[in-house]
Image 1 (cartoon, rainbow, N blue to C red):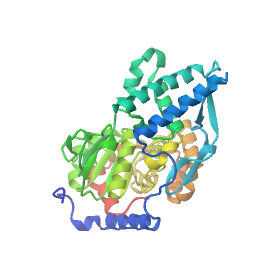
Image 2 (cartoon, helix red, strand yellow):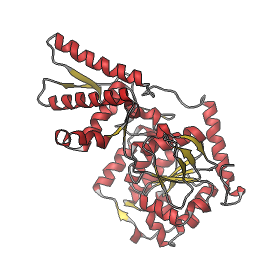
Image 3 (cartoon, helix red, strand yellow):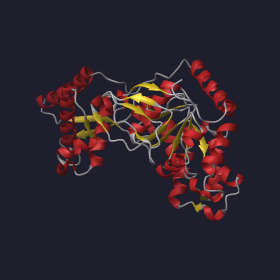
Image 4 (cartoon, helix red, strand yellow):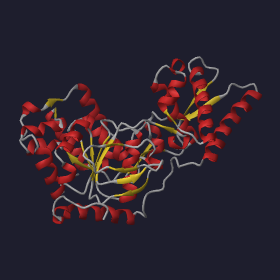
Length: 395
């Protein structure tokens, strides 16, 4: 055993154990993890060769007196996105593309910036060193203008070369946190124990962590940092031991998603989400489970379709008699977001999700997890989550 369990009796986890057995059976039936297409972890020589090919194409164009251009898959069109229940949202093999031309006033600067960052990536890979997206931005902040420009270009390059961003030797600073029954060794040899009183920052290089050890019965993804910290203060990880908690502090960054995926691939334990009963919370849960349009080219490395929705369910609001005074009316933006999610391809295979979202749409109200404090200050950690986990209250 990696840790001495201090949580509930073994019988508490019977439904969870059955759920895990069904997940494992589904994996065996499907022949293990889907291999699919998408990006793969590329070797340094493959990345260097891919960049050299791109540069060679530019030289060939110039030799023909033609204006060079980058051809990049269009990541902002649903036409290019395919849904598979076992993978989530991923790009189709033959998708529409867009050209970033060197002779167009609209795109010439973007062309030059892609070329500049390609040069930086080449040097990083060649020297086996790493840089953060922030490092790249500060090499010439005036030229780039803002961090978002750099982020988008790095994603475009990753998509163009068909390799994950971490194969480009570019890291992003993690904003996520992890706590509970988990130990691992970071790339530099640092031993990390997440079972401490305070949470541990999600590592910047998920690919580099090794020797992961856990006895956890489940992993709980918490949408908001405030809820995560409250659960820590309530000693949730000890009371529900053995378990793991993760938060991406809202919309998850790449590293938090990579960590959740790595934990699933390594341990195949049940994973649940705890999000606000609002369209934004549902969107965040969908990103963890099925991915996003923007990162669909890397879906096979990021999505965990086995994730289940634990709470806060719109039906829980009615079931627990949470007073209307603690609820918040849906804004026009909320209603548009909800309508958008209901039209997505994955909702077809999630009838229980659809029902919950229809309850929200009909009531025209949303609720934050904090609404449970009306029942009692520690209702979330003392009653709500334990009951959900013990009796299988997930969808």
